[in-house]
Length: 363
Image (tube, rainbow, N blue to C red; front, side, top):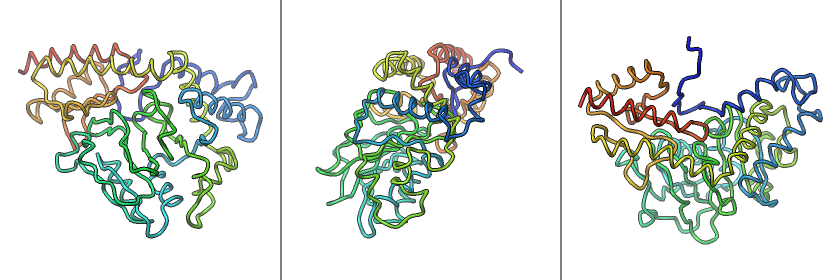
């Protein structure tokens, strides 16, 4: 059992800032001098209400979220939002447009089809989702209710450099689970933005939903109480017992990002980290990146060696060297280095050195 922490390249749940983990350790024992741990506090009590208020305030500051948007802390992960979004906002017989760039957008399409028509405005499935579609490839339908995209594709290692431009008057919906708050964000371009916390902004179990208030209040069909955005808007995410520990940790991660200089500073940091690995891939020629240039993710760097056998050997030797979580998803194979916000640059530098040594031995 290692005495020290190793480099965790897991795609999620993923690495958290070490100082946040230390804060969480203390809060588990005694939250803010209350004598009660954060896991034990009533969600109706003043101590936890302050946690929710502070977490929302930090979230709003980071992304400059205006007052006409609600910030909700929900459970169920992004997968629950795949159906909650169309259930609330896609009327029977109406059409929503989806840009399909990976497994998670495919799953979102499948759920949306339960409630209305889905038009696939573009898809990169033909090339195993190795790129983001060019604007000229996107064919919007005539009158979609909304246009949905997945901002970063964890499995395939692709990322939108900017949002797609939907037809005039059509709002964007986004699954931002794997790159939320990794770079500056103009929330006003969206109607709904949602993200599971477990990659960039907290632990598994809590989902951030940023939604225009007018949309949150506009359910298009009768739904169970817990599936209505309006329920959680009215009750400030406290209709039932929320994922309280996850919300606490999320708030501490937001404060950590603020201390580092906010989202612009986070983007610079993430570009530097990813650059270390992409430069090594370009330099060596031994490895083959899955994602095409111009579409490569700052969060998930995906590549293969010259053979599946060497892929397996790379992952095994890397594990022995203190690099965890590098096995690529079965859809791509090879290697996937997930380097979310909290992942240190030193880990990218150490992996790049390992990559050079491995290529020298097996090239």
